[in-house]
Image 1 (cartoon, rainbow, N blue to C red):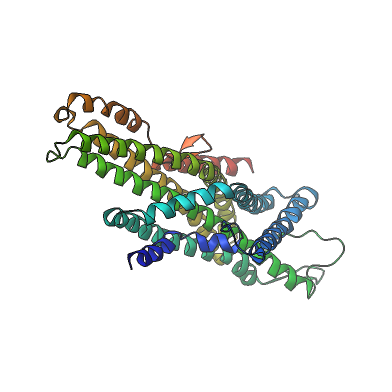
Image 2 (image 1 turned 30 degrees about the vertical axis):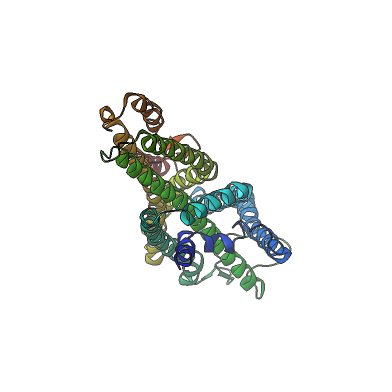
Length: 396
């Protein structure tokens, strides 16, 4: 019965699984049928095709057709987001083995955990589920609002030469057919809508991976902190038992460091692209919102502010989970250096030196080893984004 409950909790812990399965990057278990692999290959090629359908015409319009600098900002906004999610998708495909290893380690930790440890895992997974739900609702509502509602609300545009233009979510550059004529318009509209859904699903999936791995490390650090606190239990007088506890703690520290190294291989570029590209998007979206304000387009203003709030929220979530990990690491270091070492036998007290040294190295996430992922970084990014937005207004 306990194993069944553990398996159920474990399914809830993998809250990014549904998003990653949609885009075909969730690790396939060994021994899976060939049909599963073929399905993933088809999803991968179709997803890449959708993104090429957005990136290609956008680049052509930007360099061959569009001459207005203000309109090019909208193209930069679209191109930045699409390339950001495309790069993260390719990285996820490239790190499939590391992701599979991390998922297996999480599964083993859950299955071998004591009831007290499992309570810690469950508490963090529930928090991760709630955050993931908020992220998904925010991303899909703002993103699909931009791709679907905005073109519909703007309606048709009638040119002076009596030509009617129906707006598409993304720019197009086709010379061999007219994309504004049915059924080409409807087909391209659906393809661009699917491409947007893919981009937002990749965003949710990669944020979910960072959230899963970070919160699991937070759980491991919390368990290790409790083990260190129990080490100073005065009721334990046997040197052999103390030695076993010290060995267990050192092995647990080594395990956490190994898990962190594998997690950083997966998440470091996710964090880098989420922070860097969303900072650029904040500038472009803010500039577009100012233009729509001048044109008194209420619907476009609302959608752009939703997009702006989504970018800020994504950066905050990424930095927040990094801050949670850093705080747990600091709690562990504080617990380690305040151990009552003088209650230990002299020979055993010397063993604490290795534990203290290992605890002094903080467990943290980095954005491609450029900056630490923390709330301090969030404030720096917000200030930089506002500075770049003001510079953009002066230049264009």
